[in-house]
Amino acid sequence: MPQKKKEKSIKSVWKARDIKIVFSEPDIQEGSSVVYINDISEIMYYYYTMTVYKYTDDKWRKEFAVSTYDFPGILSAKLIIEKLLQSDYRDGSWQFDKSEEWYEDRNTVWYKKSYRTENIMNEDYYQIERTIMITNEEEFEDFSLTIGTGTEDGESGLNNTLKNITVHFLERSDIESFLKTVEDFIQMSINDFNKNQKKHLDLEKTAREVKNGKLYEYRSVYDDEPDNIDEIYIPGDVIDFTILDKYDGRDTFTEFHNCVIKNVEISNIGTAGYLVVTGGYKNKNHGCEIEKLEEKTIKIPVELITYIFDDMSGSEKLKYNKQQCKDDFMNIMSPEEKEEFIKMPLKKLIDRWLYAVAGRTWMFRDEHEFKEPEKAVKWVIKQIQKECRAKKQKNNLK
Image (cartoon, rainbow, N blue to C red; front, side, top):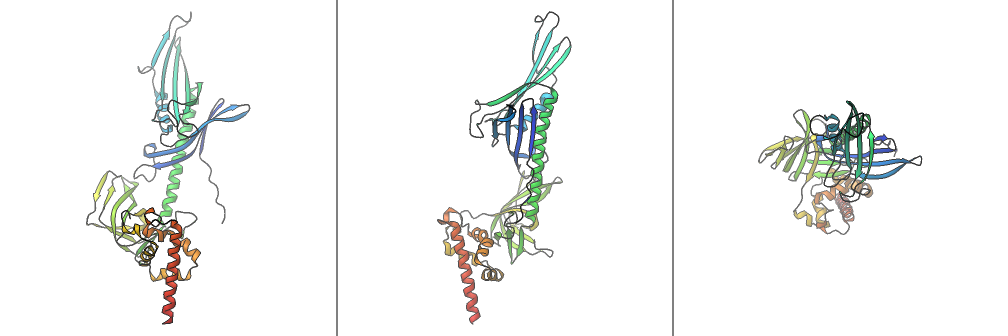
């Protein structure tokens, strides 16, 4: 198999004198119903690594690093820096001090204002301070920037145990450069998420096929197993599923819950077809409204489905032994599938059908009390093959 081209890592770097800050390894989880992220308000969770280096002995040496988990500070850092840069020292909100006697030939007035990020735990921490000194009506401006972490190398820690560095006497251009570094990293993170989301959705469109009166879900979203079957859904299954929809002209996800598959229909064009469901309810208008479907029947184009899950919680099937799991799966097999089990080598058969067979009765769940669930699934596949071959041989003898 040819090696995949390694994608360029996402990284944003800021330097000021002997200090270097590196933001890297972003991972975003979108907000509810969001398909493609437009701005930071649509980010639900934001994971990344922030590393601080100091130049000593002709070498950049790492001072500390933190990987955010629950309480990232970079989005707040962007907002407080923007706010402080725009603030007017004459608006009455600044700390003020003056001296008329320190120098014989001049009077000096100081204005100072600062903001900091703050969370339940300071995984990454930022504080920016702006000082304006006015001497004989001439203004001088400088900034201080503190960057730190309340955790130790990503492990748990306390808010009052901050490890940090502070850079003093920065110019406005330095802070604007840091702000641009932060903004660039956030935008690259969003762009990367959107690119990967599109790739994932393109794979989802090809992951399902209607045939034999059933809906087949392939492992197309897994690069190494695109032709293997992940799940099989049949009329009568109770499912939750998500479709790609539109709201206010934008792509959005609409969720359906507790729906019963009434029918699976073949399309006149292609192999995607339609999923016909009834009952349950759906979340619409960006999840802000619930619509009960009750006895309504809805016909869903399969290519719009981005997620599907058959909820078997509390089902008697979770108590099935291996024999019952085998019988249950054989009951839904088509003649075409039985022929495949007869002809295909066992190893290839296991690769192709392992997840589909396990999924029909949730064989990997603890309720079955299988000591080695994967071996139990393989046993079922092997027994199905034996029975299919034996039946065909018997029919040939007649």
